[in-house]
Image (cartoon, rainbow, N blue to C red; front, top):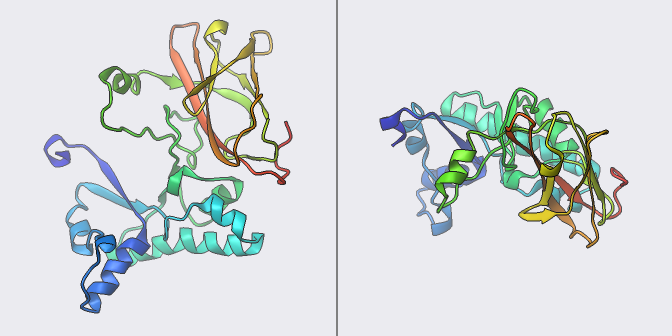
Length: 260
């Protein structure tokens, strides 16, 4: 279908999975059900349609690994998880992989810094929403199309624009140490005040908006569970344009990166 209609595409490889098959085949061993990765030959046949890029070495949830390892050990893990896929893709396919898809969409300031140091120029989250030139290249949005998808929702992906913020709390990828943070964002775009609305995951939140300071707030009342959360802020511009931005943060009691 991609070839018939001329669609571009990217195949993000987590190289341990492919490596298991390569090792099994070299040893003449039968593949188990859990080792049915694409072969190097199969991937090679798709190279004229799909760009080959990195999905890390082991597809670890990096947030969970960070919680179990000390700072030095976690930095060493990041070097391997981000660096080895580039080596394997270069070895197997003579291709320089400098794009990354974060496993489970998990990232934080340490992961972002390591991705840049390992030579990645572009990285994709699983935060939905539009992209434009203001979105950082290591935190690009990506919409998941699940079956079934309504036509109107699919069409909206191409008409919604970025809602630009000058600041926000929690910040994108930030770790906060409180389970009842006050969400706050300052909007750059001129919007219809009553249209400003927060949501946490798929849950709408009570929103206050000050049109003078262009500040949107929500004070959480119920405690948030430890781990990752996704915030979305939407508004209609005074020009009638629907705008939104989505970002990821984590609640980790005891860490001091955030305060509100």
